[in-house]
Image 1 (cartoon, helix red, strand yellow):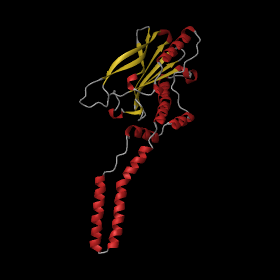
Image 2 (tube, rainbow, N blue to C red):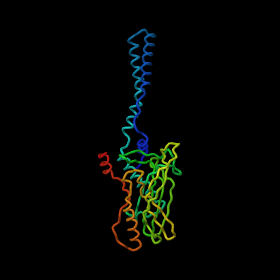
Image 3 (cartoon, one colour):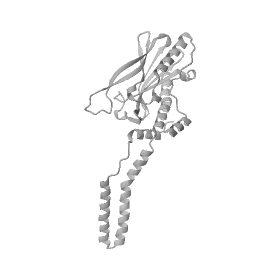
Image 4 (cartoon, one colour):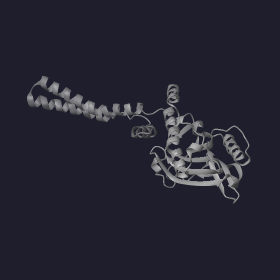
Length: 294
């Protein structure tokens, strides 16, 4: 279960990149201050031993004040979460936050839905998005040539007895906020096609310089579901250029198969083994294994 402490650790993961060494200029000031204070004591009391003792105590106090923030920041940096822990937390939050919210808004009867009835599709956001605070949109290189992101587009597809339900949102994961929520439903009998499309989209990344107006082209792999009224619903499956973990990508072929199998079962009573597409909430045992590997 998510706690405020975990939220703090997650922010720490995205914000901390190292520990800043204390300024040696300040150390020089500490030394000069100690020397001058010692001279003052020596002049005031004409006692060398007393001046030395007081100067040492005074100097040590200033030195501790100077060095303490460094060790405090170092301890905070060293106790930041591992990438394995971050992935486990993200998968858990997708199940505990987004999936639960989707079932509430769509008013789904969970007792009639199995794991293969759900597709949870997650792609990162790294550009300005309506309703999302720009400062909340971050990413960090987590593995070689792989990033983890703080804000995600999440799409839930629920396959119930007679219809297919959609829930979309932007998930500000670090702040645990769902934004821009929307829902939709198509009856299975009204669906005329399910196909895979690739759309080229231009985006201006959030980390570009203010004077850099260039855009980057990304490929949105989508499932396009069309009904008899020629209305279409495009579900983004993955964006390869965003270089996020394979753990969060859905296999396109499996996603198409999952939808087609369900459609055939509902419309033609065709029996096939289900394909499970739901992201799995990590168990305590799997978390420990991931931590050991990392």
